[in-house]
Image (cartoon, rainbow, N blue to C red; front, side, top):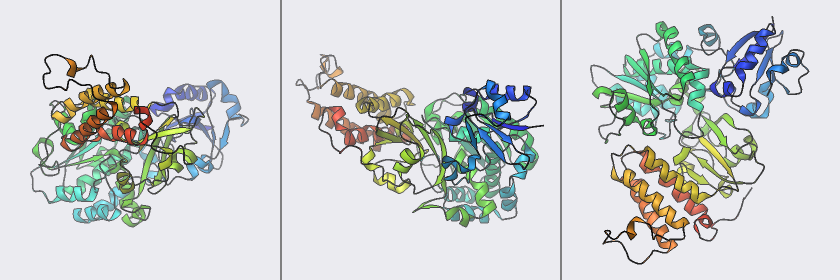
Length: 517
């Protein structure tokens, strides 16, 4: 019987993968559902296993294409995916099994080096496991980039009757999908990482906090937890489903939500590592951080640390989205330049128009013009350039984008998603929207709040565009340094970068030459 592999990833299913799987089954094939390979331009994708165990890929395909797929004559025959440039250039440490194995097959996971990291960790004392994570140089992949080993050490050193492992799977950044892909395509990898963390710090229970918009991931995780429970023991794990509030991706708001409270950020200190979930020491790590740990323990921290750039060690699953030809997930060591990712890997814009800007790090990330495409992809280089890597989502825009409108969107997004606890975020974001509206309206403000008769302290004379931009920059500084969490603190990044690199969209003169590439 011919064996065919078809992704059951949510994005693949949205593109028609279920119909392809049904058609192959009707044609007499044994269909194995896998995670996604990560290149959406070739989905729905089918891989046919040959007699020697190799796989021949075809994509994109339709259900009526099955006869041509099975006799090998389909025009979209790709061949061995590993030789395709998009995949050949990758360094897949975390996503090595995604797209290869049946996500819920324990036998498949074990056959592809699963549980090796957990076995290696359990052969070591907790301190040795923490030392290995420190030596790997792993930093939080959720956005902050804090050293994972230091966080684990703090929890290990804390004395408490109970400790917790919390996985932050509340992936809410636009243009990001790596967490979802991993949870749907290789859930045991995440559970293995959590079990290693539990052994390292002495935690006996773990939570995975997933947003309700990820039903496929929730289903996969619950099934995987049930099947892997004997191996994970003494750690027990449960899934908590969030309602989709963006602020619950912030770790303390997430803890509040798990505790059954309204998702609002907590003031720090105390740090969650000291006083976290239910007041107990808690490791909170992102999906990708925890999923990186099995490789580190199985292969050794040196193997992980030998890849990377500067203080950014290991690999990063970069997500290419927006107006880009080759959208998808590309796992690579730190140090590749932004231009290589956008042009060489991403293939430029899908529209064929010139790239004008890319946003790195989700909706609160900075915008970068092509003249900065030589920036290496690592935490320090991006911070020096006025941005942040965040969750490594890159959204591409062509030359039709209005950057003033994008800056306004950032303020509006913050106003909608703010938990309302701190004034700079709650009030500042709304004032930001109003200020950008005045800038876009060439400083006309007859209908603005300041023009109302009861606003006796407002200036009678209208501000010029330059003065309004000064107000906006001052407001951004207040939000950046006065907000309680990253939602209000990071919102200024897209606004200020749009002002700095694209002043012509705010009524000023161009600041930078056009595309350097």
